[in-house]
Amino acid sequence: MAWEKVVTAYDSVDKAKNAMKVLQNAGYDASDLSIIDRTALKSHETDHVGLWRRLFGENVWDHEAAVYGNTIDKGGAVLAARVPDDQVARVMSLLDVHQPLDVHAAAAKIGEKVPVEAKALVTPPIAKTEAKDPETLRLAEEQLNVGKRLFETGTTRIRRFVTERPVEEQVSLHEEHAEVVRKAISEPSYVADIDWSDKAYEVTETAEQAVVSKSARVVEEVTLRKSGSDRVETVKDTVRRQQVEVEKSPSKTP
Image 1 (cartoon, rainbow, N blue to C red):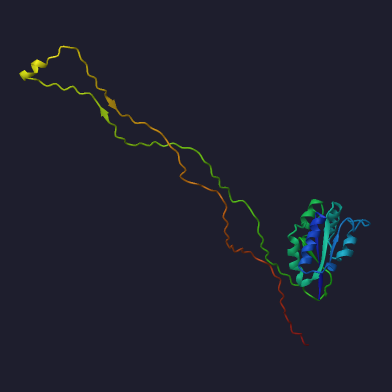
Image 2: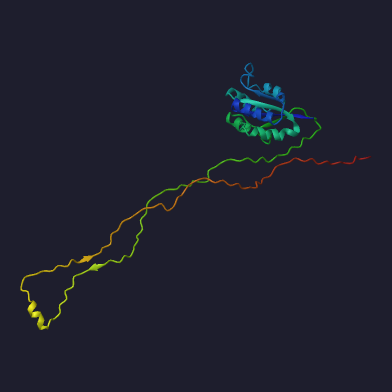
Protein backbone atom coordinates (compact mmCIF):
# COMPACT_ATOMS: atom_id res chain seq x y z
CA MET A 1 0.00 0.00 0.00
CA ALA A 2 1.29 3.46 -0.93
CA TRP A 3 0.97 6.28 1.57
CA GLU A 4 0.81 10.02 1.18
CA LYS A 5 1.03 12.95 3.56
CA VAL A 6 -1.70 15.55 3.45
CA VAL A 7 -0.25 18.82 4.75
CA THR A 8 -2.55 21.64 5.86
CA ALA A 9 -1.70 25.05 7.31
CA TYR A 10 -4.07 26.82 9.72
CA ASP A 11 -3.83 30.36 11.06
CA SER A 12 -4.53 29.13 14.61
CA VAL A 13 -3.56 26.09 16.65
CA ASP A 14 -7.18 25.58 17.72
CA LYS A 15 -8.31 25.16 14.11
CA ALA A 16 -5.58 22.58 13.57
CA LYS A 17 -6.61 20.69 16.72
CA ASN A 18 -10.26 20.72 15.68
CA ALA A 19 -9.32 19.41 12.24
CA MET A 20 -7.29 16.64 13.86
CA LYS A 21 -10.32 15.64 16.00
CA VAL A 22 -12.42 15.40 12.84
CA LEU A 23 -9.93 12.98 11.31
CA GLN A 24 -9.79 10.90 14.49
CA ASN A 25 -13.59 10.76 14.64
CA ALA A 26 -13.54 9.64 11.00
CA GLY A 27 -11.41 6.63 12.00
CA TYR A 28 -7.87 7.78 11.25
CA ASP A 29 -5.21 6.69 13.73
CA ALA A 30 -3.78 9.38 16.00
CA SER A 31 -0.28 7.99 15.42
CA ASP A 32 -0.56 9.04 11.76
CA LEU A 33 -1.56 12.61 12.65
CA SER A 34 0.70 15.37 13.94
CA ILE A 35 0.45 19.09 14.63
CA ILE A 36 3.50 21.29 14.24
CA ASP A 37 3.46 24.64 16.04
CA ARG A 38 5.84 26.97 17.86
CA THR A 39 6.19 24.54 20.75
CA ALA A 40 7.21 21.66 18.49
CA LEU A 41 9.73 23.75 16.54
CA LYS A 42 11.06 26.04 19.26
CA SER A 43 14.65 24.91 18.59
CA HIS A 44 14.48 25.07 14.77
CA GLU A 45 14.39 27.76 12.16
CA THR A 46 10.86 27.61 10.82
CA ASP A 47 11.70 29.19 7.47
CA HIS A 48 14.39 26.63 6.66
CA VAL A 49 13.36 24.69 3.55
CA GLY A 50 15.39 21.64 4.55
CA LEU A 51 13.40 21.32 7.78
CA TRP A 52 10.09 20.97 5.97
CA ARG A 53 11.53 18.59 3.40
CA ARG A 54 12.77 16.34 6.17
CA LEU A 55 9.29 16.39 7.68
CA PHE A 56 7.16 16.10 4.55
CA GLY A 57 9.43 14.84 1.78
CA GLU A 58 11.64 16.24 -0.92
CA ASN A 59 8.75 17.48 -3.04
CA VAL A 60 8.08 20.44 -0.72
CA TRP A 61 8.28 23.65 -2.77
CA ASP A 62 10.23 26.67 -1.53
CA HIS A 63 7.11 28.83 -1.38
CA GLU A 64 5.30 26.14 0.65
CA ALA A 65 8.14 26.00 3.17
CA ALA A 66 8.02 29.78 3.47
CA VAL A 67 4.26 29.71 4.13
CA TYR A 68 4.58 26.95 6.75
CA GLY A 69 7.29 28.89 8.57
CA ASN A 70 5.41 32.18 8.39
CA THR A 71 2.23 30.50 9.64
CA ILE A 72 3.95 29.08 12.71
CA ASP A 73 5.77 32.35 13.42
CA LYS A 74 2.37 34.08 13.55
CA GLY A 75 0.94 31.55 16.01
CA GLY A 76 -0.62 29.15 13.54
CA ALA A 77 0.02 25.47 13.03
CA VAL A 78 0.61 22.89 10.33
CA LEU A 79 -1.29 19.61 10.40
CA ALA A 80 0.22 16.56 8.70
CA ALA A 81 -1.81 13.40 8.11
CA ARG A 82 -0.26 10.16 6.84
CA VAL A 83 -3.01 8.33 4.94
CA PRO A 84 -3.36 5.66 2.24
CA ASP A 85 -3.27 7.16 -1.22
CA ASP A 86 -6.86 6.10 -1.92
CA GLN A 87 -8.03 8.13 1.12
CA VAL A 88 -6.40 11.42 0.11
CA ALA A 89 -9.51 12.96 -1.47
CA ARG A 90 -11.65 12.12 1.57
CA VAL A 91 -9.11 13.50 4.03
CA MET A 92 -8.68 16.70 2.03
CA SER A 93 -12.44 17.30 2.03
CA LEU A 94 -12.61 16.78 5.81
CA LEU A 95 -9.75 19.18 6.46
CA ASP A 96 -11.14 21.82 4.14
CA VAL A 97 -14.14 22.35 6.47
CA HIS A 98 -11.94 24.11 9.06
CA GLN A 99 -10.78 26.85 6.67
CA PRO A 100 -7.15 25.98 6.01
CA LEU A 101 -4.87 28.56 4.46
CA ASP A 102 -4.60 28.70 0.69
CA VAL A 103 -0.87 28.11 0.38
CA HIS A 104 -0.62 29.79 -3.02
CA ALA A 105 -2.49 32.91 -1.88
CA ALA A 106 -0.53 33.02 1.38
CA ALA A 107 2.74 32.76 -0.54
CA ALA A 108 1.77 35.72 -2.71
CA LYS A 109 1.05 37.82 0.40
CA ILE A 110 4.51 37.29 1.82
CA GLY A 111 6.18 37.92 -1.54
CA GLU A 112 7.01 34.31 -2.43
CA LYS A 113 6.83 33.39 -6.09
CA VAL A 114 4.70 30.36 -6.92
CA PRO A 115 6.06 28.32 -9.85
CA VAL A 116 3.64 27.73 -12.70
CA GLU A 117 3.84 23.97 -12.29
CA ALA A 118 2.99 24.30 -8.60
CA LYS A 119 -0.16 26.29 -9.35
CA ALA A 120 -1.63 23.24 -11.06
CA LEU A 121 -1.66 21.35 -7.76
CA VAL A 122 -4.76 21.18 -5.61
CA THR A 123 -4.58 23.63 -2.70
CA PRO A 124 -5.53 23.70 0.15
CA PRO A 125 -4.68 21.13 1.52
CA ILE A 126 -1.69 19.72 -0.36
CA ALA A 127 -0.96 16.03 -0.69
CA LYS A 128 2.70 15.08 -0.51
CA THR A 129 3.79 11.76 -1.92
CA GLU A 130 5.59 9.73 0.72
CA ALA A 131 6.60 6.70 -1.35
CA LYS A 132 6.20 6.11 -5.05
CA ASP A 133 7.42 3.59 -7.55
CA PRO A 134 9.22 5.51 -10.33
CA GLU A 135 7.35 3.43 -12.92
CA THR A 136 3.93 3.97 -11.35
CA LEU A 137 1.40 6.52 -12.58
CA ARG A 138 -0.94 7.88 -9.95
CA LEU A 139 -4.45 8.66 -11.11
CA ALA A 140 -6.40 11.32 -9.24
CA GLU A 141 -10.00 12.33 -9.35
CA GLU A 142 -12.00 15.15 -7.83
CA GLN A 143 -15.05 14.64 -5.66
CA LEU A 144 -17.98 17.03 -5.44
CA ASN A 145 -18.57 18.15 -1.85
CA VAL A 146 -21.77 20.13 -1.40
CA GLY A 147 -22.29 22.08 1.81
CA LYS A 148 -24.91 24.54 2.98
CA ARG A 149 -24.82 28.12 4.19
CA LEU A 150 -27.51 30.29 5.71
CA PHE A 151 -28.33 33.66 4.16
CA GLU A 152 -31.11 36.22 4.53
CA THR A 153 -33.78 36.32 1.83
CA GLY A 154 -35.69 39.29 3.24
CA THR A 155 -37.75 40.47 6.21
CA THR A 156 -41.47 40.53 6.97
CA ARG A 157 -42.91 43.18 9.30
CA ILE A 158 -46.43 43.74 10.59
CA ARG A 159 -47.48 47.23 11.70
CA ARG A 160 -50.73 48.49 13.16
CA PHE A 161 -51.98 51.92 12.12
CA VAL A 162 -55.31 53.82 11.96
CA THR A 163 -57.23 54.80 8.83
CA GLU A 164 -60.57 56.57 8.37
CA ARG A 165 -63.37 55.92 5.91
CA PRO A 166 -66.71 57.69 5.45
CA VAL A 167 -69.83 55.78 6.54
CA GLU A 168 -73.55 56.65 6.51
CA GLU A 169 -76.74 55.30 8.05
CA GLN A 170 -80.39 56.25 7.53
CA VAL A 171 -82.63 56.94 10.54
CA SER A 172 -86.33 57.95 10.72
CA LEU A 173 -86.91 61.14 12.73
CA HIS A 174 -90.39 62.13 14.11
CA GLU A 175 -91.64 65.69 14.53
CA GLU A 176 -94.78 67.06 16.21
CA HIS A 177 -96.04 70.53 15.21
CA ALA A 178 -98.96 72.67 16.46
CA GLU A 179 -101.80 73.07 14.00
CA VAL A 180 -104.48 75.74 14.31
CA VAL A 181 -107.88 74.54 13.15
CA ARG A 182 -110.71 77.04 12.65
CA LYS A 183 -114.32 76.19 11.89
CA ALA A 184 -117.39 78.38 11.58
CA ILE A 185 -120.27 77.99 14.13
CA SER A 186 -123.82 78.79 13.03
CA GLU A 187 -125.79 77.16 15.80
CA PRO A 188 -127.85 79.68 17.83
CA SER A 189 -127.46 77.60 20.99
CA TYR A 190 -123.75 78.61 21.32
CA VAL A 191 -124.76 82.23 22.02
CA ALA A 192 -125.50 81.37 25.59
CA ASP A 193 -121.94 79.97 26.09
CA ILE A 194 -120.10 83.19 25.27
CA ASP A 195 -117.18 83.76 27.71
CA TRP A 196 -115.61 87.18 27.47
CA SER A 197 -112.58 86.40 29.73
CA ASP A 198 -109.01 86.14 28.43
CA LYS A 199 -107.68 82.59 28.00
CA ALA A 200 -104.62 80.97 26.43
CA TYR A 201 -103.76 77.43 25.36
CA GLU A 202 -100.26 76.17 24.64
CA VAL A 203 -99.02 73.13 22.73
CA THR A 204 -95.37 72.03 22.81
CA GLU A 205 -93.93 71.18 19.43
CA THR A 206 -91.27 68.39 19.33
CA ALA A 207 -88.81 67.00 16.80
CA GLU A 208 -86.22 64.17 16.86
CA GLN A 209 -82.63 64.68 15.75
CA ALA A 210 -79.92 62.10 15.04
CA VAL A 211 -77.40 61.49 17.84
CA VAL A 212 -74.12 59.81 16.85
CA SER A 213 -71.99 57.65 19.13
CA LYS A 214 -69.21 55.15 18.37
CA SER A 215 -68.24 51.79 19.87
CA ALA A 216 -65.13 49.71 19.18
CA ARG A 217 -64.66 45.95 19.06
CA VAL A 218 -61.85 43.58 18.06
CA VAL A 219 -62.56 42.12 14.62
CA GLU A 220 -59.29 40.36 13.70
CA GLU A 221 -56.03 39.06 15.15
CA VAL A 222 -52.78 39.02 13.10
CA THR A 223 -49.75 37.03 14.29
CA LEU A 224 -46.24 37.03 12.76
CA ARG A 225 -44.37 33.74 13.07
CA LYS A 226 -41.96 31.56 11.10
CA SER A 227 -42.79 28.38 9.24
CA GLY A 228 -40.14 26.16 7.68
CA SER A 229 -40.13 24.10 4.53
CA ASP A 230 -37.54 21.96 2.81
CA ARG A 231 -36.71 21.73 -0.86
CA VAL A 232 -34.34 19.56 -2.82
CA GLU A 233 -31.93 21.36 -5.13
CA THR A 234 -29.75 19.59 -7.65
CA VAL A 235 -26.22 20.99 -7.70
CA LYS A 236 -24.43 20.41 -10.98
CA ASP A 237 -20.72 20.85 -11.62
CA THR A 238 -17.87 19.04 -13.28
CA VAL A 239 -15.12 17.04 -11.61
CA ARG A 240 -11.85 15.99 -13.13
CA ARG A 241 -10.53 12.47 -13.24
CA GLN A 242 -7.26 11.21 -14.55
CA GLN A 243 -7.33 8.09 -16.67
CA VAL A 244 -4.60 5.93 -18.07
CA GLU A 245 -4.26 4.71 -21.59
CA VAL A 246 -2.23 1.61 -22.30
CA GLU A 247 -0.63 1.46 -25.70
CA LYS A 248 1.40 -1.49 -26.85
CA SER A 249 3.84 -1.23 -29.71
CA PRO A 250 5.12 -4.39 -31.43
CA SER A 251 8.85 -4.78 -31.48
CA LYS A 252 10.58 -4.25 -34.76
CA THR A 253 12.33 -7.33 -36.00
CA PRO A 254 15.27 -7.02 -38.37
